[in-house]
Image (tube, rainbow, N blue to C red; front, side, top):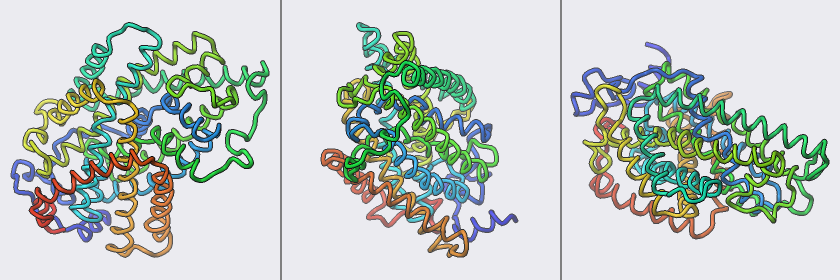
Amino acid sequence: MSEVSKSRENALPIRPISDSSRLSEGDPATGYAQELKRTLTFKDLVVFGLITMLPIAPTQVYASASIASGGMAPLVYLVGVVAMIFTAMSYASMSKEFPIAGSAYSFVQRGMNPHIGFLTGWIIIMDYLIIPGMLIAFSNLWLSAAFPGVPNWLMILVFTLIITIVNARGISLTRWASYLFLICQLGLIAIFVLCALKYVLIDGNGMGHFSIAPFYQPGKIDLQLIATAASIAVLGFIGFDSISTLSEETRNPTRTVGRSVVASLALIGMLFLMQSYMASLAHPEYDDLDPGMGYFDIMREVGGDGLYYAFIIVGVVSVGIANALTVQSAISRVIFSMSRDKMLPFSGFLAKVHPKFKTPANATLFVGAVSILVALFLSLDFLARLVNFGAMTTYMLLNLAVVTHFFFRKKQRSGFDAFRYLISPLIGFSVIAFIWSGFDSKTLYIGFAWLAIGVVYGFVKSKGYKEVPPVLGDV
């Protein structure tokens, strides 16, 4: 028996689940039978993570973050990178210990407490279930700016059908779509950077030179201001954790998943910093930016109408299809994971795996239906509040689960382990808590209301928090 297997066995005695169809060839390290198809590699996961976070994500919130931070959007993104790097390390540790599709739901469930794990999954559902619809709504906003008159309901239906069909047919098709959209976005970013360099350094527009002002302006640094702005900008980093939802479809997941989480976050951080810095140099007058279209207006300034429309078209397709595709894939697997534990309503339906494509097809169809309703009837402001609250709360719980599981339960405290399992996750927790403090009261009211519903449902489902899923009976 390998050292990894021994550590899992000592850390988590598992009693087999009662569903014999899932247990007949179950992995003793997880308690579940292998039902999904393993095809993904390290490179595939990195691309999946990049697409989920979206390389051109500053198109969504750069203007709002710049206004909220007094023109220091790059500083805000830097705070976000620091916060997420430590949390990514926590995801890497847990994905190696528990290579299961449920992401933070499974990690907190097994690393801290089954009931807290359920609430974590409940928060993830609030977060990821609405993101595909929100992304499609963003695409409609941009499309309307470029092509007025296109019916919103039609584009919502088209985008949702495309991503749902692709996801239901298999992760391999999702993988190749991700590669295609990533190449398009990186090419467009390169063109923008070159145009911005010419606009600023050669033509003498904007600031006219390189400057540290986008990162630091004497007398304007205020922790609460940065926390508020970071709570907006961090929307672009949400999604790196989605890689861990693919653990059961990855070759050698104990080694591959964690490395790809950290790598994808580091790469996306560099892309965000580069784009926001060049945008700040090109257009330092942050107070006249339009919150919704400000980034695109900067594209038009530095590259003309051609770059403006190219960014809108690629943005619409990348966000409404590519980004929504990977997020829908991630939340479908979380719902599948919670449903096979019989923790959600209609679990029998949602836990079904397609016999041919080996995907959680029913969960995918459910997410597609919700996405249509979200995009049609909920405002972008309301959705962004829910997403940010859900993601940041989940990340804080995940960091605490690392400390609980490794440092206290397994007593891994010597040498580098003390940093990896105590100091690093506590830094990640603290930075995210700082960002969390920037949420306005409306966001907190909405978030805690959803959490309260989960507490009541979990209490009823577990008969007063006394019962746990059969697979976790010995935890």
